[in-house]
Amino acid sequence: MEGDRPAPTSDERVRAVLQAGDVGQAVTDLLRSLGPEVFGFLRGALGNDGDADEVFAATSERLWRSLATFRWQCTLRTWTYVIARHEVVRFLQGERRHKVGRVTTSALEEVVAAVRTETLSALRSEKKSKVKALRDELPVDDRTLLILRVDRNLQWEEIAHAFLPDVDSPTEEEIRREAARLRKRFQIIRKRLADRAREEGLLPR
Image: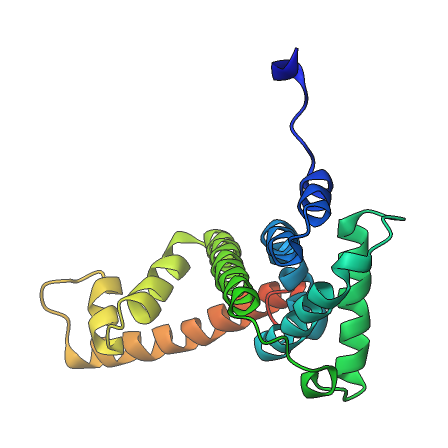
């Protein structure tokens, strides 16, 4: 029965649209399907949002220009990564997009912008999750110190009040000493987190 047929794959959907003669829609479908992971690949390879943005746009343009002649000797995913990798090489060799030529279509620009925005948002969320996981590795007092200083932006003297055992009437000297101790502790925590972030690939080494 027709209802038992498996849903068409991404390649099949794009191929059907191409056969119908709508190259623009085929490229749009392809970019919406594979764009986020390809943009993430470019961002990881180039290590810079601006460079990844430029190369992703160039990759999208080249897909637009060549999809109609794609010979289906591999999957669209493989072919898209081949093009992306070639665009990385061109970029690193100094061949900027103006040498390729812009595709003057608002449809392409809109889908590229949408994919870029969605991907960066997802990557930022993922990075925040990883940073939170690194924070969670810290002892409670260290996490408390980070939150009060970084997230709540309290002054050191204010934080000292929270850490001193005598909360009612600490002396000015006690507050000063505790604030100094907490500043030093904060620097140690920051270095520890930075080292762990580098181990996890969240910061450059």
